[in-house]
Length: 40
Image (tube, one colour):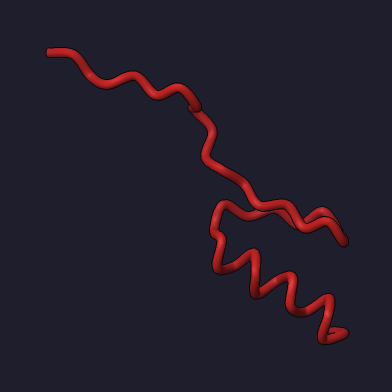
């Protein structure tokens, strides 16, 4: 029984251009980006 091969072993990561924060979760990424614009 053959398992499908995955071309990319690593998950997609979202990296904050402002501070380098990294998360695999898109929702968490956007929530993080907002703090830079809100000013926290």
